[in-house]
Length: 327
Image (cartoon, rainbow, N blue to C red; front, side):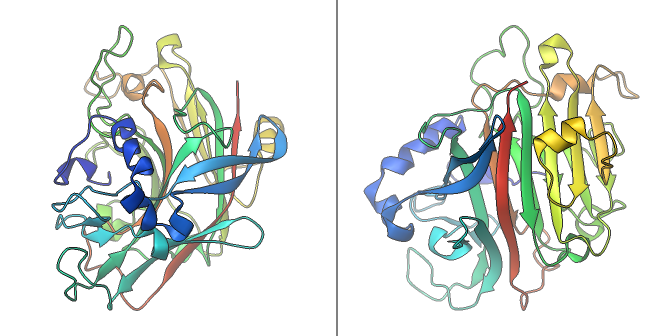
């Protein structure tokens, strides 16, 4: 299940195209302190107290008015308002919030227009300064907490994923990536109520199909009740070298070092995407994207089944730490 970006009124070629909005003064005034960036505590190549730079107004201008963050598409009707969807806490961690804003006004008409406030962060600087950073192969981890992932609102999705906005404009260095959006989902809390499949979460290589669950295009699993903190981990392998991409979800707060060295550490769910074929002969490793034009995203949003989400409940997650390590 994707975020339906391609169905919005304005369609870009890659994430980098809309990056120009980070230089738009009007767009930046829509952000706290007129700044479209925040920093998340990071462990970078084993070094603690590093930082990564994340873009908060990714959705600016992607609507019929070409300004603001309101997405009016009925499949994805919500407002990614940076002044409402996040708060940087005293310890540097970031709280993301999704809630029904009954007092919201339409950004064009200023008339009452209640809708969901939802959240999305996009990694813009792996070193804290490089605005044009794109993903690279290697180890990734996002450590996040909430009240209980095992009892998460079934109408709300928390996601950690790589993404390229739209179709690649050039061949993928000799092999066209069949994953059009170049999306790898390290975690999506897509419930049974939304997806009509067992479990309350999934890993996926897009375009994921509910007709091919359990390791073909996605892997479904259950986060058990009483799980307030999880670590979403991925080793992004080079598909041209037929390297296996490994995706794991762990209960608790874990480092890349402990995941790769502690043999006793058991995952809640694991998926190895390697050189194998599905039942119809399609090689799913071909859907593992190369990192060109690729960014890491974290979001908290309401998918198409808006009627499932509880409008009385404020959904919150705390991004405790991001980690990256080279091979």
